[in-house]
Amino acid sequence: MTDLPPNHQHPAVAVADPLRDAFDRVRAEVAKAVVGQEGAVSGMIVGLLAQGHVLLEGVPGVAKTLLVRSLAAAMSLDTKRIQFTPDLMPGDVTGSLVYDASTGTFPFREGPVFTNVLLADEVNRTPPKTQSALLEAMEERQVSVDGDARALPDPFFVAATMNPIEFEGTYTLPEAQLDRFLMKLTLEVPPRDVEWQVLRRHADGFVPRDVSSAGIVPVVGRDEVLAAQQAVRGVGARDDVLAYVVDLARATRQVPSVRVGVSPRGATALLAAAKAWAWITGYDAITPDHVQAMVLPVWRHRLRVAADAELEGVGADGVLQQVLEQVRVPI
Image 1 (cartoon, rainbow, N blue to C red):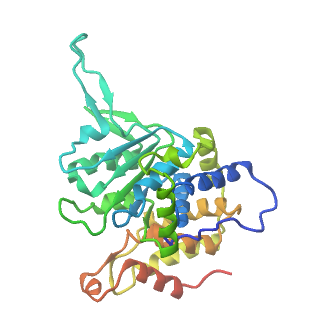
Image 2: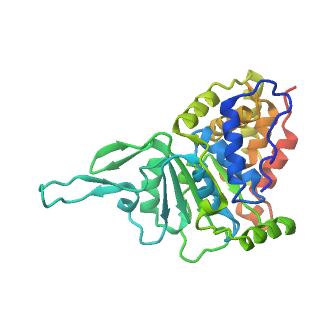
Image 3: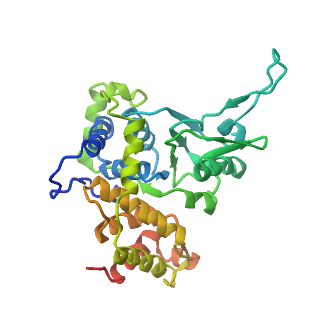
């Protein structure tokens, strides 16, 4: 996955930051189980610290689910998993009122969405009605059951997986739900040497269903995550860099092959991700480099390329690369 540079340590950082070092250790723990997806690991941490959600897309068998489970194992956060299926109902996600015969009342039984890290496996296999229940949780950080709003735990982070080539039994994700994902990360089939390392680990006894077999131990908890999110919010942004983000967004709306460009909400999403990436790399303010590093993962799922352009092989990533080359970069 080449969306983000695998080596994020900035050599100019002179003063050690224990909080930032803790998230470096998270990366090291995840690497015990997941090989060759360093960029995706960086993207997951950016999404968590920017208080967003991440959509992972890749063919079966490229470690999408293992990546999420390994990241959760490296943090002392409550984690739950939902296998999305066509018969999944909204109450299976949010929870529901259940009759208690002993008291004659209907207490609320929490669903799996009441957690810190939610793994939504094959999210596009459930119908729109159930997807809308997840949409409210992602956007409002709450669920509504029988007219009552119930707040979700803090932090709350959704990591959803999606298979790009399996269409049987799947539902198209509504554009409104796609827009609620801060980032869309693509996991590619690894090169030969990385695939060999995967087999070597399996030959040595690694069991993907049990990430503890890789020796992953939790190195951060809820307090560290909340403190890092607060630190990210404090990262600064110069006026000219903000103008650069605006110019990039407006440029996507002027490309002839694009039917729908990036909205103002997409611009704010890019700013949030760039601030998280700046903090991870040791900066106290974002630079154009941080913005450029985040453009593809934050905007690729927000562009709608015209049908005739798609037939000619034009994709969102190619359009965004073109925009990056054409918009003037502030000095």
